Image 1: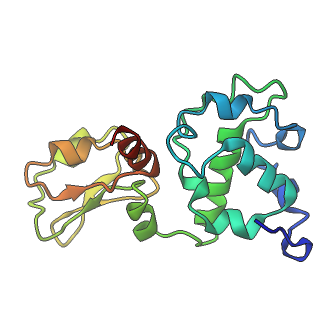
Image 2: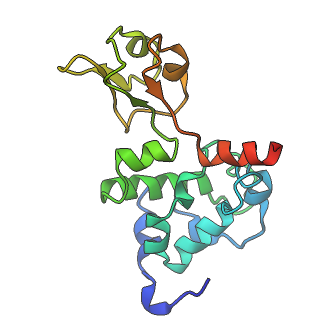
Image 3: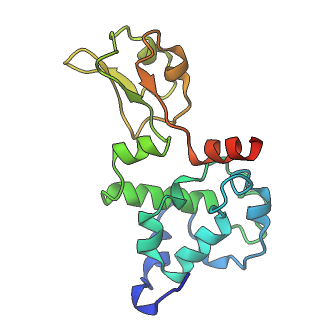
Amino acid sequence: MTVLGSNLDIKFAGTLTRHDGCDTLLQCYACGSCSAACPVEKVVEVFDPRKVVHMVALGMRDELMRSDLIWACSQCQSCIPVCPQGVRCADVIKALREDAIAEGLVDAERMAALGLVATVDPGKCVACLTCVRLCPFAAPHIVEEGYARIEPDLCHACGICVLECPAEAISLAPSMEQKGMEAAVS
């Protein structure tokens, strides 16, 4: 990958530090502890939490914010306790996601395709309220038209609604991690 200085945002890391857990991101010295602890890095070839932090430090804002890279992290936070510098990779990635959503760089359709949000087929939904009752995150609700809708900002892609929907109206695309695990097994 070629990095052109003219494409870098030198203020990017500084602006990201306003988010909780991001104030130490520039202290990373690439020891690899986060990568060694990351379960996603083992199955998603392009993902490495250390790489994300360094791309932020370099100012590679546009490349990061528009890529699928920030959506591969499972937010398990295994990277946090192992960092000798106190860099919180999972928090940095969470902040990148929040900014991408706030800036309109990702929509519900893309999040659904990445396996981050469950979706409802209105033609199959019978508004039985099973998903509404069982979701621990209060993501689904019944809309005026008489079917369930899942709020993308509340959905954690846990799959409970998919498994429990009696009408099989809810689906969840495989995440990058799930695809990587399936490829590793085959």
